[in-house]
Image (cartoon, rainbow, N blue to C red; front, side):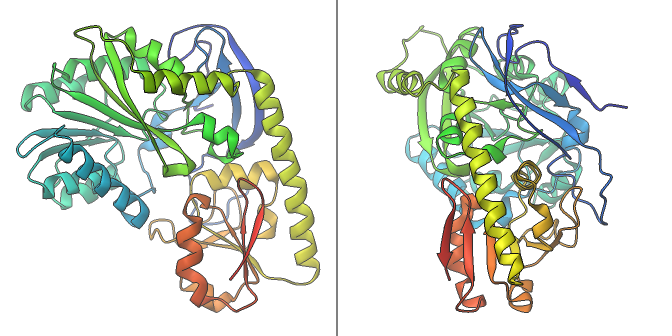
Length: 412
């Protein structure tokens, strides 16, 4: 059984002209951590294509969403950086009067309920929707009402019948994970009224290209978003993007604000300027991706030379962070053989193995026991906090390796 299908149509516009941009190495599913070493783990194709009709970048092969999301080990609440990000977001929407006490907020892909809990603390009614049984159990235990479901038409009907119209509908880092985007927005539209604002965050493809974050390409991320294709997409549903914020999460993301296009207002100048910047940076040209992967191959060569040299001198090397993107990073660069351990603060991942490898995930307490000479940070978007929080646990000669945007060595 394949558990995936090959896409023939663009997820946004339905166009059939999908041009190949790059094929990465086949990899296991990024969040499919193992309890034991499993070198025979099933690998899936990882190919990037662009729609020549609307310029949307996406994966060519789509893995069964039940396989991807029914049991999920990424937990928002384990990261102080993300908790702070959510707190700032809630503060912003309240201060800007987008939501107030006793309003209703719906979050799609609510994970462990970290964001909704902050809204709830501000006397705002909340509901979450998430397909991961293990995470829904966590959020419901905290009295954050959460439906264990994909955001489909049946779930939409249930919400429409049993809850007041939402003032905000939020989908953070979900829009890139959803291959049925036309169905997704149809359902959003059903729940929206003239006062509802749909807010979603996505990792920004332009930042990914600029900083060589190729490891953001993995099977959960079926889409790689820019502004231009999304403008056209929402217009089809009588919706308008009225604001776009640039934010720092995941190495560079965008926060979109969408509402019903009742008065057919024109796009504001700020959004049009961002689109012009995408054109200027040639983000939709194949040559951009050819150069992008040439630089990735250069990084691969540099890392192999460096790590081989350190191993010759019996240096101890470990990795820090076991995010989903680590699987693409280790497989595509073929460097997983250099590490015996990876440290991660998420207890759900500890004592498991990175997908298809013999690299065991251990807790932070292991840092002092192993006393490594080099620590390569795979959760590079948290590099600053990882370096700062762990200096005291390392010997004076220990060094951190940060792979992006340029390979960098930092002394303890």
